[in-house]
Length: 156
Image (cartoon, rainbow, N blue to C red; front, top):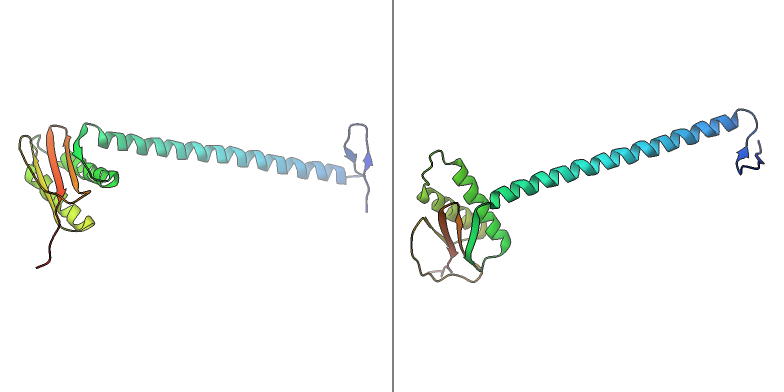
């Protein structure tokens, strides 16, 4: 077994080629740590960029949306906003197909959150409705107004 001797600089000197091997081993280890740190830093940057892109998409979806009245939980509101934005963006003509938007929102909410959802879409309408607690949303998106509400269903 080879022994090291303490030197004035604080390093151990190894006999023969084992000192060179130890330095090489440590050098490779430090190099791998540096490479790992660089990779981790790059991974963090990529994740941050993806989060910024998702936030930008979310901001674009919410652009031009104004809640007029609501007692609906935020996740349900955001669901309604995303569906509405996607449908309005998919309509080829500049004229809004109010019936299509209303039907799509109603069907989506009925299938996702249970019956009975009602939806009114247009640029000018009046209403006075009774709704279930937590099931009312009145908002505008672009120049279209949407009233979405849930009523209790009584079994026959």
